[in-house]
Length: 162
Image 1: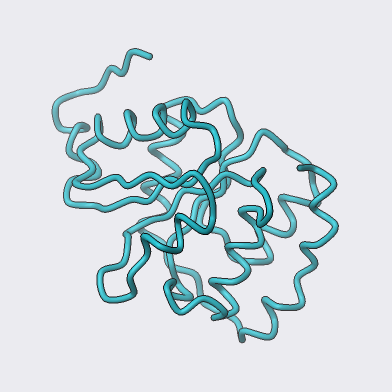
Image 2 (image 1 turned 180 degrees about the horizontal axis):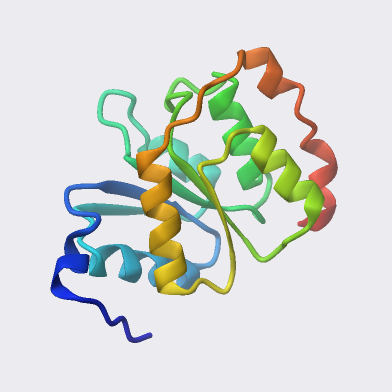
C-alpha cells in the first residue's frame, strides 16, 4: 500500500496512542501502517479481545481503540458494550472506539450506534477515509447514557454475522 500525504498531514495523529484489535495479522499491519504514516506515537496490536484487555491500563489509556467486529468468542460490538456499560475496569466508559467491519448490515450498525461508537469503518479501508474517522473519534467524546442503557442494547443476535 502506498500512502501519499502532505508533510503537515503526517503529524495529524502525533502523540496519540492506539490499540488495534483484529484476528487477521494482515489487517492489523494495514491499520498500523496508516496510523504510523500519520504520526501516531504508539500503536499496539492485539489478535483478540482477551489480548486487548491485557494491554489496557486505566492509568495509561489508549487515545483510541480500533477493533474488528468479526472476532470470537467476543466480537467488537460486545467489547464496546462492555466498555460503555462499565463492565471492564481496564477500559474507560468514554473510550474512543472505532469499529472495523466487512459488514454493512443494519443490525450491526444500529447496535454500534446505540452503543455510541466513535466511528464505524467498513473494510476494505481507504487511508484517507480511515484517518478522517480516527480524527472524528479523537475529537468527539460521547455524551454517555447510564450503564444499564448500554446493557439493554441487543448484541447476542449479531453472532450470526461471525
